[in-house]
Image (cartoon, rainbow, N blue to C red; front, top):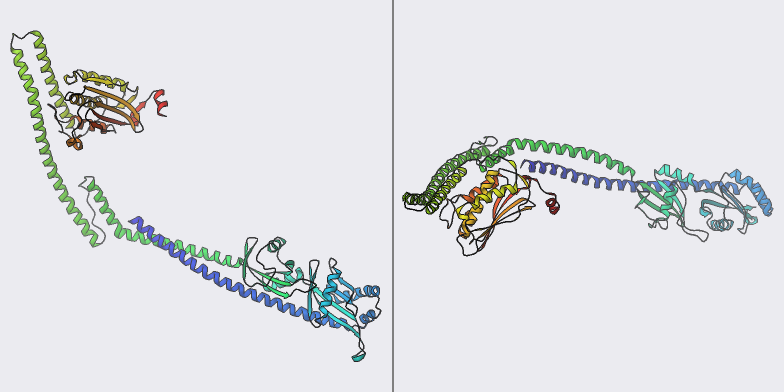
Length: 587
């Protein structure tokens, strides 16, 4: 009960802690997810603010450049080489990443950019598209680079006399520098993608490749609040369309990634806190269990100990009166019951003792009269001097058999009357022990005319009390000889030895009429006998006591008309040595 109570309280504490942890975790996850989504929105707003400032700056710079007389003078030459050579100075003057000059028809005269060369055809197409939206910026990509440009017309004169000289376009690259500025302002990872390809961003190249090979569709259409994994890390991602696809190039997207690393840190701190609380709850549960044990379960444990002692027959064990009043009253009632059972047992033992004495006296008196009658009658015959010597010898043998029978009966009574059997264990040869037993049984009158069959005895060394084990085998063989003399079958008795998994087995078989069903249940109890002219019914009871004293057992293996078998089994530790042949057969 104490263990169950302790386990119940600890389990309850741990279960409540786990439930609390799950609830808090889910709440924190929802809160953090909402915060990340809000941060994502702020990140996009931050980029839009930066982009708006950059667009205004580009428009202002392009407007100023379009008013430069020197730039207009160059365009009046209409000479591509002159325009290309002179345009470098204006590009350096502007300080932009991209600079281009176009003729009045929109044809590209010259362009300049930092970094690798661009595809001239892509540049010309993008610039012509930008002319369709004067006063605003335009995005275009070429050779893995992304630019935001602003175009202005170059004119000469005013009003009706205004003449178009061409166009000037400047732009800034949306590269890693811009991405880092946006990332720092938004506290998130950002990338720029054109037509599903990442052209710039703060993500490492490995994560860019993983993003490009993913199936989320993030690089192809606007998506908001998508949970995904990159490099084993959880991210919340959103993408916005900066410019739709045009004939000169694909659509441009800005993608923002917000890591869940902060959430993991919060949850890790929360897990540690809840773990500490769980340990404290478990300790409180143990303390409560100890308190309840001292006041409830310990008195009940004392009652259980008293019950176990009573079941063992120990009537001296007293139950302590402690705990609640109800438990103390139960202890007092148990003590009263113990006293009543002790008195009842004493009375029962006295009655059984008297009944046993009466039964034993009845059996002894009958059997002793049988033997004494034979001795007395034969003694009277011996007193007649006219009886021949040969008949005297037969009469003397009958008297001797009667005396031996009474001696065996008294020895059995003395052995059975001992309160404890003290064995003298010594190493003995099983072959010699069986031979001595067979020699003794062959000299008994009851064995006359009985075919004693003995299979080859196992050549074993056993640790037994040789005298007591011989007595048990002698009783079994004598009972078998007495049984076969009362049947019409050929009288034979067989002794077999074998090694079983549980130990050494010694079996005595006979061709007798079998054990009557009425006494099979009490066969090994004292003074149980059936169909014998003499004997007090102690033979099998003694066999049982001797076998159990050796740590073994005896049982009725089989009993039908014409075949009965008793088996004594000794434990394997009684076998000290066995021949190599037997060891090999057993393996």
